[in-house]
Image (cartoon, rainbow, N blue to C red; front, side, top):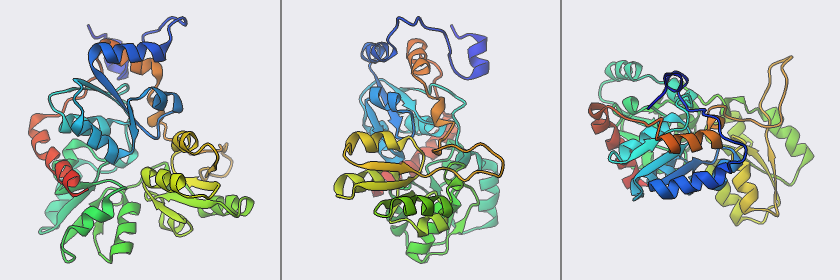
Length: 329
């Protein structure tokens, strides 16, 4: 039975004896309940270590569509759990903390997009995967940072397109395709904090390092990057090249997988740009991704809550642009 305090909090924080090995118990519950744990690269290392599958948004969407398990625990943010439910509506999808939101998804409300569409008749809508199911239901095709150019290239060059909500990603795609998509003015609060000055400082300290930047970064940051792309793009590059040092401009959680798969290489996280007088930190983290903890995962498996549901009326339209993206990727 659900406790009212859990519902108010949006997660379960039932205490567990210190004698309990959470990693062992999580794996036991997964086997017992035919559950799979999916984790994004931006979660903490100990979660990536107990996950069945770790990936970026595109890889996670593909896995959610293909899994045979009866239950999925999506360790990421809420829109990712919604995507899992859209692609596997007959499965139970658990989200360890319902408060794990996304600044990009929050920047584009369905009612605002509907009004914007009405103001631009004849335009098709391309939405970044970092959106709610309600926004996806108003979308013609979804993209991720890993496949955005490929998907958009599939549309006629003279097609009228609205791209949102990530302005930086849309601006980059416009620059490399020669298109003039109308861009929604949204942004990721993590990637917006990277600065050219911080990157150049690290470059002076490590002149042989390759600079890698996520496409959610601002144009000036991308202009000084040697490698521009998704988290998967960065991983693949580091794994396939002999360069020993890398400067990384994306959420710091990716460092775990970079260091795990490239133990002989060194990675420097670009610190966020801080306002005057604030306390600085050495890396740039998404507080929403870090809401996922081993205790919350254990409790969500134990009690099979919080579960994510999508209104069937919305789901029927929201799944179509995701399936179109997967068919083009």
